[in-house]
Amino acid sequence: MKRIVLALLAASLISAPAMAQNAAQVSSAQNGANCPRCNLFQADFNNRTLKNRNFAGARLRQSDMGLGIFNGTNFAGADLRDINGSAALFGRVNFAGANLTNANFVGAYLEHANFKGAILSGVNFSGAEMGSAIGLTQRQLDQTCGDEATELPRGLRIPVCVVH
Figure 1: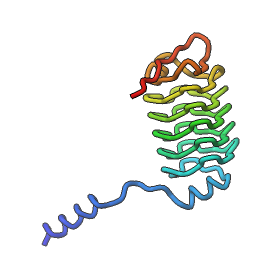
Figure 2: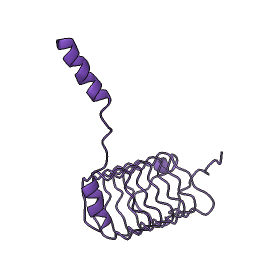
Figure 3: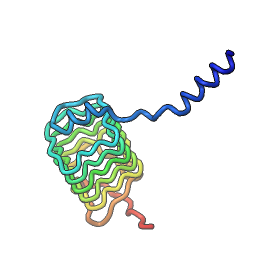
């Protein structure tokens, strides 16, 4: 009997869904609410205007933020892995301590964005405007890529993205 109970328990854990988004939090955030530490996994913020919001510590992994306006928003310590931020406006945002692994910032506006301590492994900054970004180090940028149109703070360089 114990074996059957243990087997059923193990099967339920294996088939349990991954930590999905919180639909109520996503809806609230899409409508402009602050949502620190929220679970916004795979949320659709495409073409939304969410200026001066607080998403510190939120889980925004795989979210679509393309063409959005997020100027002045706080993403400090957030999980932004695999987001699409292409052609979006991220002026004066706070990415301090955020995980931006494999994010897409192609053509994004990132002037005065704070990248202090952010994880930037695999980020594509092709065509991004970030000449006045702060907190960026060469070590961070060495893990990213861009192109000849990428604008960087003086003295920093970025590897060229390899097209497959």
